[in-house]
Amino acid sequence: MNSVLILELTVGIIVSFTLLGIFIWAAKGGQFDDSKKMMDGLLFDSEEDLQAAYEKEQKVKAMKEKKEQNKKEEV
Image 1 (cartoon, one colour):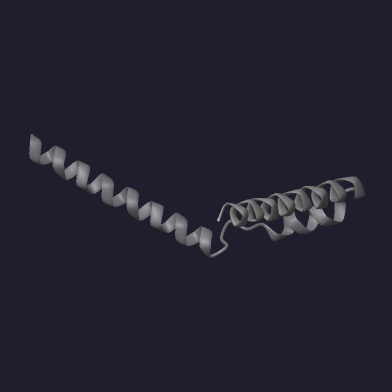
Image 2 (image 1 turned 120 degrees about the horizontal axis):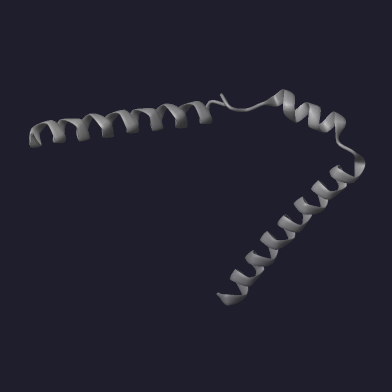
């Protein structure tokens, strides 16, 4: 009975890691990228949406710069 349990566990782990590897490979290869959705978003977004996205990007950039300055000041 124990040998069957160990065999099932081993096969399950091998299959799980294989599927995880296939998923990672597909994600890195761009399998899940949807360029049509991205282009449609650019075409049909309003100016306010685009401005909000730009402002958010600028805030993230400013936060990163501030974090780097804080690290430099600590050293």
